[in-house]
Length: 332
Image (cartoon, rainbow, N blue to C red; front, top):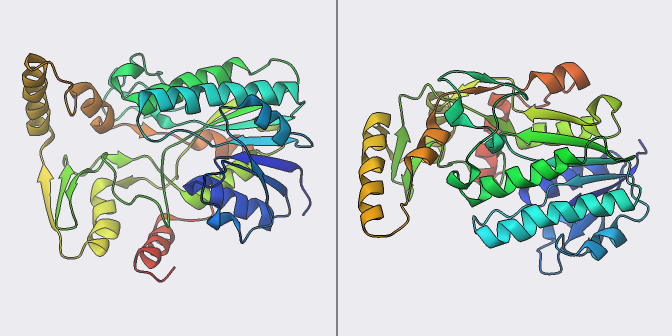
């Protein structure tokens, strides 16, 4: 097929590099926006044209967008540093919007995050669709979540302004070959030998497999039904911690000791830690607010993008597990 020219920011990242590869395979003309200091090895096998620049520099973005019709903005700071989050995630997104509007870009697809939802305002087992409560205290969730929410607010403010059509995607936890297989949402890990899983294991993980998210982005490109819309992107098959531990973690860590961390015990420990650290004038390692935000059992709903755009994830959970295991075992 022959499609529009697509600019991808964050093109050397876990998601961006996979997206660039799939876009070029499907015949899109792709411009990969990368920093000069970035490792571009994963892009070398693609037909993408590299454009060097920085999202902090609006002029380099404007130059990269010449002749482009669609921008996929996936660049974000993941360091957790407050200043970097402000410069790269927040100001970088503002620069992308400014350049896209000035450059006559037809569509901007922004990769936000399900972390923008205010989980503490939800009831246990509540279903969260795109109208769910937005985080009221992002500063208490951590610098990454705070920056992503600020950036999303700027993106949503651009909807309906001028000719630029905006699509905001809120993916869940992205996983796949080469990505993280164990996240803080699961629990705590000490090396490869000691792994603690928080809670009873019934917690539904808001997973989205890498290739399924890429397919969602492709579905949105030039789709009128995606214009000025927000979509959650999570895999349709519910996967709880017990299932993920049994099918992914135990095969990857065969010699590890797995144990349960009761949520109530962890909550009490974190509360005591907050009191002690406050008395010492130090910032706590983990707050009760962040713990509740990551562990309250809710179900993120991703049905809108399937109903409205016809998104059909190409990879089911079991097939995705086999892909990840092959990669991690050096067979990918």
